[in-house]
Length: 201
Image 1: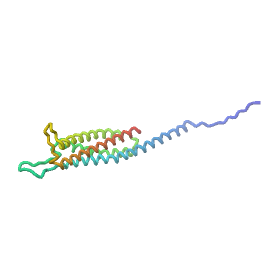
Image 2: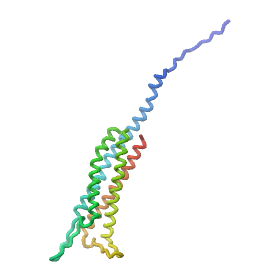
Image 3: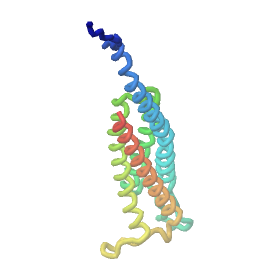
Image 4: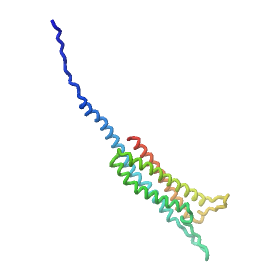
C-alpha cells in the first residue's frame, strides 16, 4: 500500500508584484516629508515679512532723525543728523539693502512652497540669510556703539554726551538700533528653519 501525500500549491508572489508594493512605504514617507516641509516653507514666507518691516522701520527712522535746536547764533546753527556720522550712514545703507534682499527672497521662498522637496532653493536661502544676518549685525552693533557714546559720552577722550541737547535725535537713532536687532533675531529664526527643512530631506 503506497503512501499518498497531498501537496498544496501556494502561488508565490512574483518579483514584479513585490516591487509594485515596496514603493508604497516610500511614497507615504515622501508625502509626509513634503507636507512637513511645505508647512515650514509657508511659515518661512510669512516670517520674512517681520524682518522686512523691522529693517524698513530702522532705515526710515534713522534717515529722518535730523534735529535742529531752536536757538542759534548769527554764524552757527546747532543741528544733528544721521549724515553727520559715517556709521549712521552705513546703517541706513545696510538696512536698505537688507529690506531689498528680503523682497527679492520672497519669490525663492514661494518656490520652496511649490516644491517643498527641492534642496537648491532652500540651501540658497540658508546661505544668503546667513550673509545678510552678518551685515545686519555689523550695522546694528556699530550704530549701537555710537548711540552709547551719544548718550553717555566718554570721559577718557573728552567726548561729551549730546542726548541732553538733541533728545529727539537720540531717541530716533536708539529706536532704529533696537529695530535692527529685532531683524537680527528674525534672521536667526529663519536660518534655523532652513536648517531643519534641509535635515528633513
